[in-house]
Length: 266
Length: 94
Image (tube, rainbow over all chains, first blue to last red; front, top):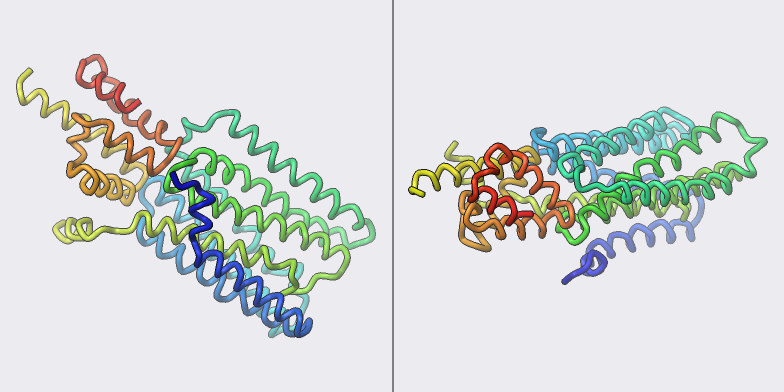
């Protein structure tokens, strides 16, 4: 039987997209900092844009009825929030030439988390009886286990920095760890199922954001952060992983010709 | 047992399955009916005689979580579970 890892490895387009994102960012850094800021910002348009388009397509497929419908509605709101946040960041940095952190973009980044949590909760709602205490405890321990060292390392040297910026930057890894709990529960719950590919990709995406947010917090304290630096690669990978996750779900639940015929008869 | 009684039980089981799947979402219902049609050349009411088909499809789709969906189907049939054929169906999808 094909394992989830095999399934991921056979996804050559996914690996290609991940490699392409990393290559674009690394090459732009080799050219220079200004180029990497420009390329880094512009790369968010296709990555966050692809996620937005796919999330709207899957919302159109599922509608808003049923638990999955509610879940995909929340996910579409999450994708919209992230896209708006990325575009605000881009406009502030490239057009207005102001420091985009902290800014209005953070409001949209932060607003996206409750929507992602709502997505996970709504999707898991019909199968909640299968969730065991062991799963909840193991996922929570893993999330808290990676959060504590990350916060300790990142917050340690920040005593002299602006308190508001540090707190704001620290909120992100905390929220990431929080949404990682249902993502991990989903992976173990749907293990061996066809929907597990999406859950695995979403979980990996959340881990990528956690890594990137921890790096951001650390680099922000060192004042060495700039858009498009190699530490941002996990952010792009998150968009790629989520997009492929949504895509896999869209293919799995695609409308068959017979279903369309039945709908035409209604 | 006459044919009408079997048909009523078949309808009850089909209703319970459809309810559980539609609560999740119409595409889920469509996916399961398509799999039944493609893999076994049968429809939702036929799961009354072949509960193992439904169990396999749900297990393929949702992995370990399929038990929660079958639990939901069993709950809908709770009032009729004292009847032997329903009891047989319920224990087969367990």
